[in-house]
Image (cartoon, rainbow, N blue to C red):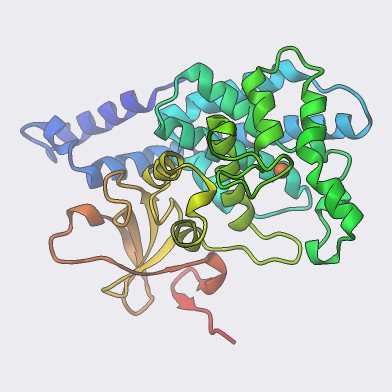
Length: 355
Ligand SMILES: [Fe+2]
């Protein structure tokens, strides 16, 4: 497999030969906008590979859920193998997989895509916390399997929560322990991954379930997956609920849900995802409309954006990469949108009228 670093090197070499960087090309690499431009171009080439990984994980976890629904065992080795590959991919370049996980619509097999997305988000938070490969594999495996306790209750899970009976609610709330019991049959699932399955709905302030554990009684990995799980659930549509724009989730996390997770985990998520996560639609104070294509880890409010539409909403013939952390003229984000707030045409973009 061609490494991203080699591709960037090759890209910069080509640019140098073309005279774009006649002196010190490596200095230009420090300009994150140029780097992001190179990454965006390379991402196009790597897009198919990342999509294939997403599909592979989806198929394997779907099969596992199917087997568990029939009280059969699932094939663990291939699941562990694909999680390890996803970790490698996210270490090299997570943008495409992250974009897929953020924007993947909820299809009929919602719970399956949810598991894949939570796996990707959890590994990303783990990466931000500088965990090693072995720990990232454990986080990824626990995250992918976190809801296996739901394998026999998907119909309840897919019902509008306001229409559930108290018996159904109690059954649903038992899924972490049911999952833990299932995982207990597999000696090759690490104890820390099993803990994730049992504790992913516990909350730092003790408001979670099933055991109402508090503070450090909840493992770090479980808290990581808990936060990834909450982010995924709220930013994707669910029965009886509209999805939230990722930016709104981040705002809510700081205002109302700060004490649900340890501060270092929230900080790690914001560092890696930014306040406007990758693929967010934003409007600048110049009224240009852009899509976030990368984050600046030290400037969460000032990501790197791809300017796609001008102030009148007309599509630019040549999209422009703008690193908002490097703008001295005060260019900043004025507003963030969900995709459903916009009517995105080939030639223009409009804000949907609020009824
Ligand atoms: Fe769950």
